Image (cartoon, rainbow, N blue to C red; front, top):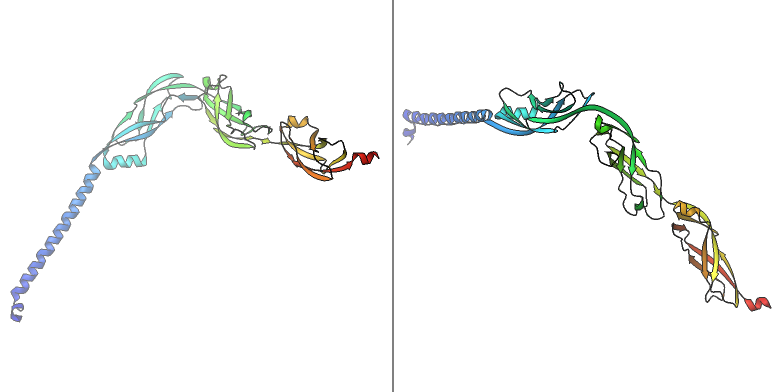
Length: 322
């Protein structure tokens, strides 16, 4: 056996087998690289079609003219190599626009143009044309008016002066539209029964004299609205009276609080100088202290305190006559 391995031809055969295996391995790797390279090259050169939403720009003297009627975006279909279409979409180094610089005021139908696209790309724009209205530009400044439902406020509560921040707004648009603006309004939607100050940012709308909304640009577009809602208060006297007295007794009634504070609608409080406190003397034949709950008139929401202690002193009427 040892002599067999010592033979020179044995080593030659082993070397040949190893060389063949190495050659097969190298060839398979090279084929893989070639296949991968071809696949990548195919992906780069393959045709691709993609539709994107492109912003539509307007070439016009914006200091002098105001344009309406055109869409903000249009459909742009790009076709070309996979790599070029992808690169174009990612970089956005092109411009979709309408050129109105040579046109006068009025309505016009104009083509949509594109520049900045590679000549190796084909494209299609939808729509290919738009109808626009070119008008003289005008700006105005108007105060913000606040509209709200006063009946939503809880009964007895006062409405303060509503305030807007900012107090004025700048409106810009076609001269014919701006001239129709009668007022700029912030509509505050007060929840029913609201009993505290309302604060919220509200959208602004420009209205004509008939209340129709107009197509103008406002700066700013919102305003912070504050509507104070609170209770007025007033100090009044307590007027103690009694009912159901016994003819055989004499009563002396003294309230521990002579004055209280009442809260409610300001106009209602102005008419009130005192509050009655009627004490029921039924069955009372000795000195006692009673806690009486005040009855509040319409327009008065609460009183402080709302329960009054009354000291009742009782004497015998016949004994007093003697």
